[in-house]
Length: 251
Length: 369
Image 1 (cartoon, rainbow over the protein chains, first blue to last red):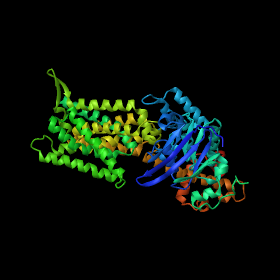
Image 2: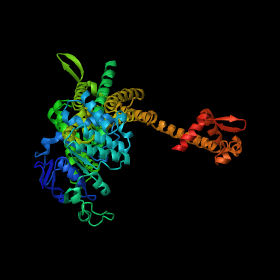
Image 3: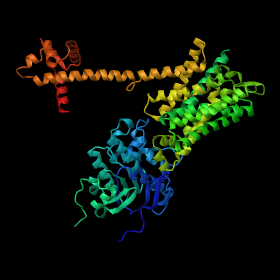
């Protein structure tokens, strides 16, 4: 198989444990540039932990993560992050534009305040997610789908090369889901690498071109056609997948 | 005498403002109980440093005591990290332990230490102006005012400088970490500030009421605004108002100033809680009441609309019989009719109620939804 040597994300032998309870066992994952990859697996499979380990938010017990051949600390500026929507307090006293501008804080560095330029970039990102009419809206007054769009806009203003998103489809309406998918595919078309923690097995083949099946250890990863098979899924979910349709990759 | 009153009032205002500023971030981070823990746990630090410096307002004492405060935070977090103890229990275990060391030290060396438990618990604002800063024979004012003024400026400087970082870490700590703003650093910076502020305020209001100054104004301001910067300004203002009101209350009834300020804090909170527009209790009750009448009015116009132009319209819209058709209480029915007449949704035509064009639109809109 002939692919470019450089990997957007390279995870090698990554083990994460809480005390002696492993959450991720010896994960290897190579993500080539320009793919739209979904991480799929049952609850407690370690999907969020894997994203957090790539971002250096949890300390691995073993193993290594490289983003374009360098450790994350050296590549912060090219990595965009969308945490789970439920991980923040939406009653925080601030508005939509302000939250989106937080995506520029990394580029600003310590102490420097956002200026007109940051405001404009945030406005552009809000237009991309169709939220330009909500700039001054208090964030607690947004619906779940709107909150998710705001989070996406915040990642967009980071102007990253690699995006890591934790369940961006969680609890959003159908319109928002379609809008997010379009956006993700646009990012891929621009040559960005997008990694998405995903829950809905039905849509994996429609939305993504790569998939990683995870259940504490890596079951398989690669192009959806090759990897998203009922055998692999049964191994990931322990035979609890009732609905599986016929393999798309099969001849 | 007037000078004395003015000094006390100034100290109270500056202390309240200094406490309210970091308090905003504690309230937003749901950590107000940590300030309670800190304000108690600094006692052994104060006592030990007092042995060395023999002064309650020396910078060394403030730093040493603040160190004990930060130590409390470290202890609580270490206990929590074992996962054997939850945060509230960890706080409940840590600060009484440290506080009791302070209490034991005071009681053991009571003869040598000019500290008594009442002053520790409740502070003595009234005596604060007695300790004065003098230079070249001039009286420059009470020492406490300088101490609290410095702390207020310190808090202001920290928040102005790291406003963006504090906001991000408070709202979304994991993004802050991913972007390289070490949340732990900001966290301990804030905790140091809270400790220093608490030690400074301790002298004036004691260890119990400090919490009222830290938590009260921000919790009140939180009800009034949706903007962090405005919440900070409002908190400082409300803190000052509480101080002035409390001092007035204390003079009026000749009671403890610190106690009166804390009482004022509660009164102002309850007042805002009730009357603040949109989200206050009264606004909510009025909204519910209005919704009730609006909905009843919609039911009425839909009823009229459904039978409009039909043979039975005459009986269905007879004002005297409406309550039977709708199975409503007659009194309630006549109130709804009055409400709808006032809003010009319906008009009276002899014994009947007929829809206006406005009422027809309302009915149509309601049915489309």
